[in-house]
Length: 394
Image 1: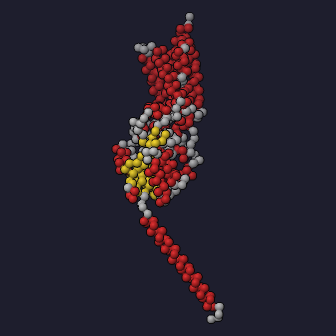
Image 2 (image 1 turned 180 degrees about the vertical axis):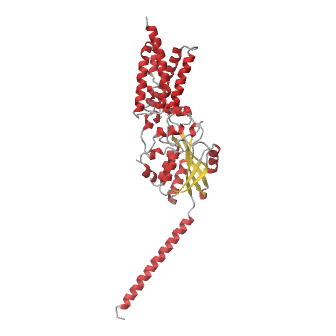
Image 3 (image 1 turned 60 degrees about the vertical axis):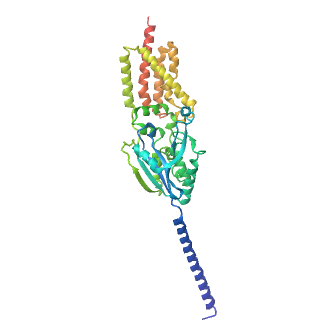
């Protein structure tokens, strides 16, 4: 052995010892991390989606965040869909589009039983979130149900029970939902979804078609589409590896709504033509001009209501409503100024054609409204026009 061999041997032993120590320290650190994970409180977070119900305010579904955290005494659902009929100035707030909704939590067994009693489907998706993300979400949910934080101004499409759940999850997931779905075109707009979810209710469907303006016909992205609980459910399901378990807690026997809106204008046209025939038969008892004036006066008043909701309230969905061409406030002027009877038919035809053209152009879907009410308007205008012509004849 030369004089250079001993230091080399000592150096090799030193390097080996350092490496072995590093391996041991890594193993100990890994074991410590595993121990900390196993000792961390168990918290499970679920997105719960409730299917549509029979009542008109249940047609769009509902959702909630279900938190199971035994160390906090939590087995509760947190949702944002509560309102109180006894709140101060309830009717005025409803009329002006300033409804106060509030968030609340209740035991999951209690809430699930309520939806089962209503025969509404319940699906729960368990979300894969880190312990830090779960802690942040639970902290936010507990804060938002406090009396000083729980109230918010409700908007049917922009700020509702589903968008609040969406936003809370997105914040906890570090923006993963927004990053995945913003600027991704949605296949249906807000009116399309409204039509398909209310198609089974003759009057609710027609009433919403009459009251909603052009703002709901605007194209939206999938992030905005999550104003519906069902679309939030679908978006969470499609996000890679976010859902680690899905449970069907209750399967409803109600007929599921269609996936796309159907054409219903024919049923409204048939009813409108039937109403014209009924008015003609009734005219043997009640003079036809009186029936015509009563109908056009009612249309004019309804048109004033549409204008009020457009300009005088916070109902964003009611703005830019071209149905004022069908329910025209100018009809009221015509009822006062009887000399206008001779020209009423021409004006009604003009407004009807304009409404129909706007619908064809895609500015605002109004086919059902045109089919339901334009025949009545034309018939009433024709009756008054004929009466005016007969009076003017020598």
